[in-house]
Image 1 (cartoon, rainbow over the protein chains, first blue to last red):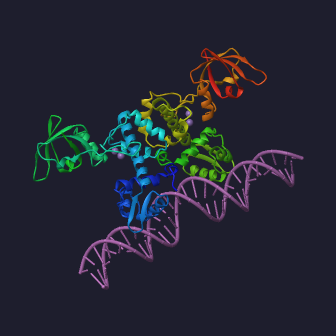
Image 2: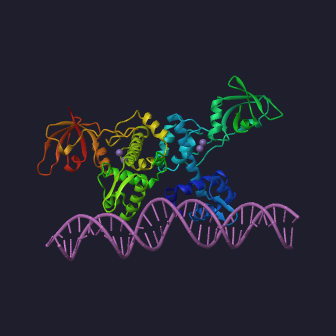
Image 3: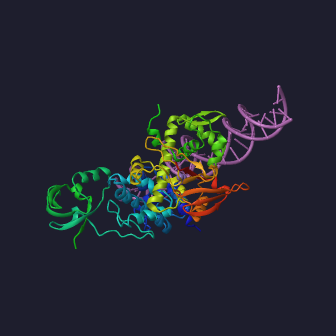
Length: 227
Length: 227
DNA sequence: AATTAAATTTAGACAAAACTAAAAATTTGT
DNA sequence: ACAAATTTTTAGTTTTGTCTAAATTTAATT
Ligand SMILES: [Mn+2]
Ligand SMILES: [Mn+2]
Ligand SMILES: [Mn+2]
Ligand SMILES: [Mn+2]
């Protein structure tokens, strides 16, 4: 009924909706509310309703009036393909063009809509098939598989444990710039030395040096514990 | 009155019109006919009229009712910026991702619309500031300057002259594939050995080997004469 | 259970970019 | 110079994606 061709004739807007629904968790028959999508996309609920009907018509989402939408299998596949492109482009920008991790998202938002399977596969190859993007998020493989890394928020790990910084939760440019300024980067080794009960701030050791970070920071940094 | 910001909020469609007008020669106050633009863009003349008015409104073209359009200074600058992006992306695809010169145009048509000055400047740098694209066409510099190479059609040069193949006139995928099949590539040294008066076909020497090519081929290959 | 509040959909409008068909202007041919 | 042919514009529609305001459905509170 619906063919692979659909993937090629999707509009930019349709792709953005699919991606947003995926990010809001609508990939496992969990219904995502119209309002949630509207807020995330900075659009109006009525626009979301219109698009929901169109995407349902195309077989990309399940849509139950007044209940919300979730992605069909084809919808999930489509979402993963767009996210794959987004994240591969982000890696490309950082590794090959010296972009900072705070600059890449905006450009990747455009590049993710380029239609050429060969292009993205060659970029993948050029980058030597990276598994994670500059923010530590996993890159889906060509056939839609990806491994979410075993990671925890820095704010959640116990005192005296050691880990490696592997990702950020907040990917805003301001947060990333703050991390740059304080020499906090993915790959750094972190050990929690002390937790301040009063404000949940942490005293940590990072690659030798000691520093103090607020809960706000710690709760937006992912670490992988040493095994 | 009109600011650089305009360049950023141009739609894909507007950019394609500007580019087409430039390629049809509308950069030096030569008026380009509505029909010519429509034919080139495979659209209808009435659509061109609508866009002409809009582009004139934005200060990108001069538009005289019933006479045609030509690019303003800002229009020319815009066109050169898009062409620069198109050709740099083509070089990137060939040099970094092993695309053949027949595959790049279609993808570059998409990539040329990506909005990021930093991106294209970094691509330029990565490629070591190439002067020509894979088809031998000159790449405008950041400030809009470019040198059209001193070149002639192979069909136009006299017997016994030697030259280097520097470009193609027909850039269709079928023609480029034909050239690949016959090992005709940019950079090859060519010497015209004989001209057949009857059908204008040529007997040539290319990098040692001798071969015979039709007028159809010779009149779509550019060569630069040895000085 | 009835009322109120919140979320969602409908109805109607708009802008961008395209189209068709008809009208108007320009060019060509005699 | 005038009629015919061609080109271009106008007028009116269509599609896509958005919006506002009003109506409807669902959820929350008394
Ligand atoms: Mn991103
Ligand atoms: Mn990312
Ligand atoms: Mn091209
Ligand atoms: Mn080219």
